[in-house]
Image 1 (tube, one colour):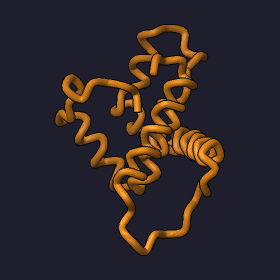
Image 2 (image 1 turned 30 degrees about the vertical axis):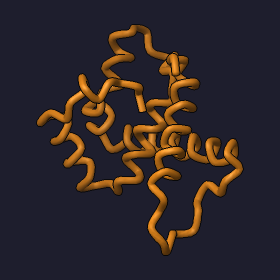
Image 3 (image 1 turned 90 degrees about the vertical axis):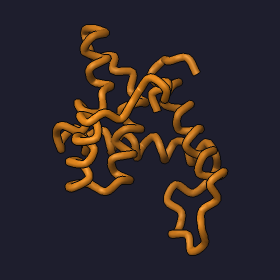
Image 4 (image 1 turned 180 degrees about the horizontal axis):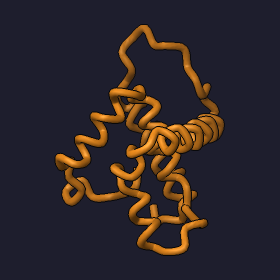
Length: 123
């Protein structure tokens, strides 16, 4: 969601621990919404790039329940906007058939681009 290179951004033990801890309290979809919401925020109220960069770390985001819940709300709003832009229902009925991976990848890419545009990052 943040446009980082998968070759440089690794799932180390600290990140894995933060994710596993958060998964004991929250559903995966809520954590994904929190990541999407945080990624879409330009963090304009931050006074320094250093603080802004620290806030973009998964360990920071998942360290407190209040952060997860705040950013998940922002992520839900982003999803609604993305669905409206694509003219698709925001909360589709649970699929009885397997979801097409291409459709899922396309929706995820649309969210990535929308998040990048909101935070002012190059696409």
